[in-house]
Length: 48
Image (cartoon, rainbow, N blue to C red; front, side):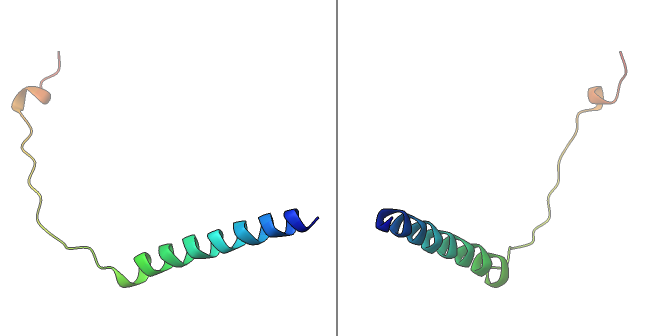
C-alpha cells in the first residue's frame, strides 16, 4: 500500500500545481485588446 499512497500523493501535488497555474493565469494575466478587421469577399454572399 505505500506505493499507492505515494502515487496518490504525486497525483494530488500535480493537480494542485496545475490548478494553481490556471488560477494565476486567469486572475493575473490581462489580454491585450486590439481591433480586428476581416474582409469578406462579395461572392460569399451570393446564393447559388
